[in-house]
Amino acid sequence: MSYRIALAGNPNCGKTTLFNELTGSKQHVGNWPGVTVDKKEGVYRKNREVSILDLPGTYSLSPYSAEEIIARDYIVKERPDVVIDIVDGTSMERNLYLTMQIVETGIPMVIAMNMMDEVEAKGDRIDCGKLGELLGVPVVPIVARSNKGTDALMEAVLQVAQSGQAPKVPDIYGAELLQAIQAGALTEEQEERAADLRYTYIAQLVKEAVQRKKSGHVETKSDKLDKILTNRILALPVFAVIMYVMFACTFSENFLFVPGLPSPGVWLAGIVETVWGALAEGLIGLVEGAGASGWIVGLVSSCLDGLGAVIGFLPLVLVLFLLLSFLEDSGYMARVAFVMDRIFRHFGLSGRSFIPMLMGFGCSVPALMASRTLESDKDRKITMMITPFMSCGAKLPIYAMFAATLFADSNQTLIVFSIYMLGIVVAVISALLLNKFAFKDGASNFIMELPQYRIPTLKSVLIHAWEKVRGFAIKAGTVIFASTLLIWFLSSFNFSGMCHMEDSFLAGIGNAIRWIFIPLGFGDWRASVGVVTGWIAKENIVTTFGQLFGGVSEEAIEAISAGEQALPAITEVFTKVSAWSYMAFNLLCMPCFAAVGAMKREMGSWKWTLRAVGFQMATAYVVALLINVVGNLIF
Figure 1: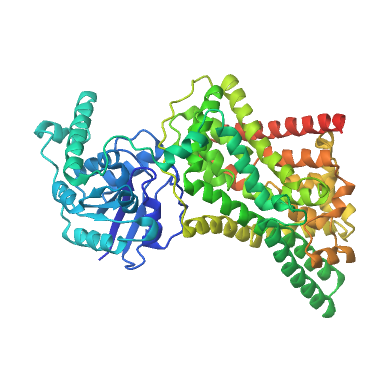
Figure 2: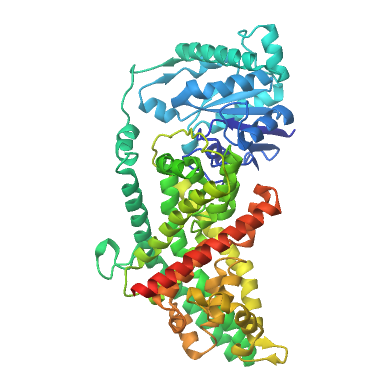
């Protein structure tokens, strides 16, 4: 018999971690609230007839935000066979409020008492048997991070599912109030009274089932770290240093200030480039040895140029997201959002807007979806308009290509770091302008749980990084490969047939629009075409340059074989200033089509989507123009 099991709980209680363990799924797990912004479904790996749903985190069934509405509607309206209520054992008083409300729905449930390792480390003791007896539902201790107790949990869940036994509502409300609760028709006065009764009952539950080792406040390791990491003066400089170190581990060719010592990212990239170069040389040799015609050799070489330009950056993406996911899972990024609230409030936003922006460093699509966690419509719209200013993983190869080619004699880490920081600065200034001229509402309240610092599990970090790299690789094998073929065709043919690149369809398109970019310092038709192909996928810019600036010459084939990231030919078109302008424009302009589609879904109208795209294009043009003009005046 098949069963539907729903996972419910407060934000950051371990729902998604448990979901991954039970289903073998690879959902993003983060040590900060708001990671799950939609319900996700999987199948229990030990029983294919049991489907498990991971609901967004919610503090109660009285919804205020979009993710709380999703959780409430599924539990109350869909009525799953069993609800697994995940309770953070270190914060029982807060977590049990949702538990009480689920009990009131009459849906069979099991409580998973999570993070028992941390409870024991504090010297506390939770009598799960006693708590289960008081609540009338099974309470199973687990440690989701290490998969402890999950088998016992599912045994209890299946037993409850088979019996269909509903939990017994505690006799604390009275008939009239209970009837109003179950009918979902509470007045404001009744809501307040019900909340008081729940908290009173929860206090009694905790008193009887929990033994605290120490009374009063005890300063934890998290408290000690927060004295530095959330300090009013030190927080932002520490954040900047941490981000710089992260980029140094990814891009630096003089890691730890040791000349000639490559960072882990550069070292891994060198290995991948060498392997790819050998494969490319072998494939080109096979094609030539088979006596293929010139256009076939050109096609194969062009495709290898384009794909190689992207594949060579896979190690950099991997290292960057390993480090970024470590910071997320540790709980540090939640502190960054808290710190940013002090700044964002001056610009009409709350610190919660920084969470989608941080997710934007990975991919704009889930970052835009995460904006639905914001309660204010104004905050949601502004956040969606500025989130694409964050450097997603797809933009990283663009920076690395220019850094390796035009800034080889400079600090490449600083160049890439400056582009990432530019996105944050422009986003903050844009929020100020939008709040002042396009929206009139004040800043919304910002209440956010700061989770305990935790050392992330290797599995969680690897899953998160693998998701990003896999998505990058899949895009290289589908969208980018198809784009490579299209670019080769458009750059090799015109209406008369096969032709020189300068006379091709692509050159015609580029020459028709290049005048737009002349004030920005990159009026060459090839640079213009790169901007357009980047709207399909930002990695396409590197693919396009690999084809248009590489060609099918012997030198290009040797460059492929050598696995070089740099494209020396682009120095004929770009200076250091115009290259920085080009990077800034592609950082800030309209994101890829997939992100625009996500923006349309979240905004709910093409009118606001087109306004957002227009704002992004205008911002990109103005910033790139300023960089080109001021940069040339200085340098």
